Length: 68
Image 1 (cartoon, rainbow, N blue to C red):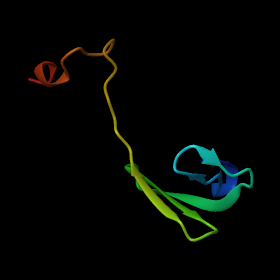
Image 2 (cartoon, rainbow, N blue to C red):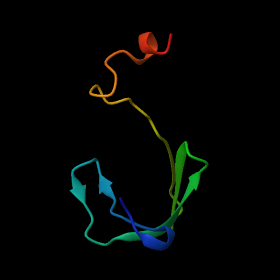
Image 3 (cartoon, rainbow, N blue to C red):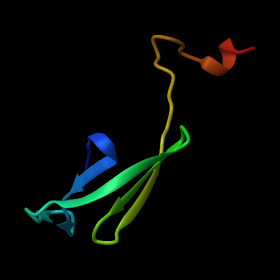
Image 4 (spheres, helix red, strand yellow):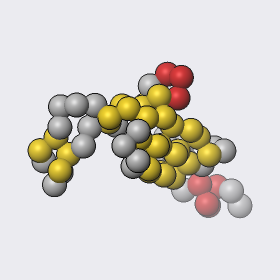
């Protein structure tokens, strides 16, 4: 799945996770605030993915201890 400009997306279907079709499936994506991504493909498939934020270790090795 590739997120493109203008809220467009292209994806390919891989049956069984191995044999991928060559024909791209188009669709659109939107963000849900700053926490998730919603993707709707033209073939009716829909996906939601939540972001995960991690503090880089070079910034803080133990952010919970540093916050005290």
